[in-house]
Image 1: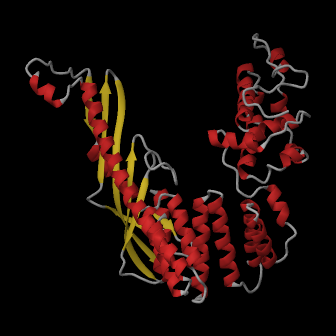
Image 2: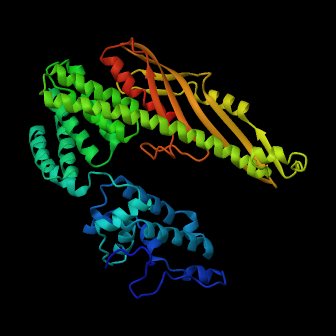
Length: 466
């Protein structure tokens, strides 16, 4: 059978999940039959799930195992055996709903009942697209099995290249990451091989649409080359791939900066003029995209301001300004009981300042990047509108925060601007620029050196913390 989300789980005899009667006595509680809850109470449920090939292949995915552990905790909670029919039924329904959302969970539930459910890739993709299922890790059990017997980082790299050429980015990624793992176990690590494996991992993550991890892998590769002080290594690919990751994350300022560095590295390494020309075109493309991105963001912010003003006017029953002037003598004043707007801008700005100052990001190589101030040019607006007893919160923020980095090589100051913050937007890395928070970074360009470039990259970590 195939996974059909619209159908409710049924027992082998065809009956729905059994419910006790409505008398609520102890006998009814004992009659309550829920094989799903009972199966998850068993101490060896994980071992049983691992014995089913269809389910076993999902067990290397953290998201799947997190769901299984939640269901185990739910099945073993006091509510699941409290004797109250309604509460016990709610536990059963929660487990069933988890199966309706995630095809893998439904497959596991039925496997524990001795039934075989075939879950296809299209079922999983659909559940991911709808947001019913947490996105799966790019490397799954089938990929881990490919690399479990590898003993050499060079062999892992060679086989990874073969899979990448075939278009299997997930299998290639598994090999490159296995190569990194093997290489770090050796007494002497080849910086060139390690940087190459990390760079190739970044490329796979880009192909698989994991830009945050692509950026991290490329940054690690750049750090390895710097620590090795190997000036012969061509870093243009590293900066190019990190720039592409930043573009996917909508970090346009960083994308332009990294692409410019990729071009400079190409010139330093003496790459063919065709490659230099391609990178130069990429720099210009990203500059235009950055300008367009910033212009669109400012336009959206202005539109939200106008929408807020229009909403207030609608709530007050006001007409357009021209009509309002013409009928000023006739229009009655709105009742204070009908509409009231309270301005909380001053209070909100004070609380925001208290919240952001002191936010600290810990650098991977040691040291910290700390927010030191909320600058005066920051814009904070907040108000609560009450209409006929119903309250609505409206707010907009454009935060300019100064930061200071302290690492063993020196100190550096900069600015992070977090904007597009409003009651109708949200924090989402790489999300839609019209509905998500956006940030940009600035720094003291007089401070130079490899360590300064690392700080500039890691300062982006303040975005998530803020």
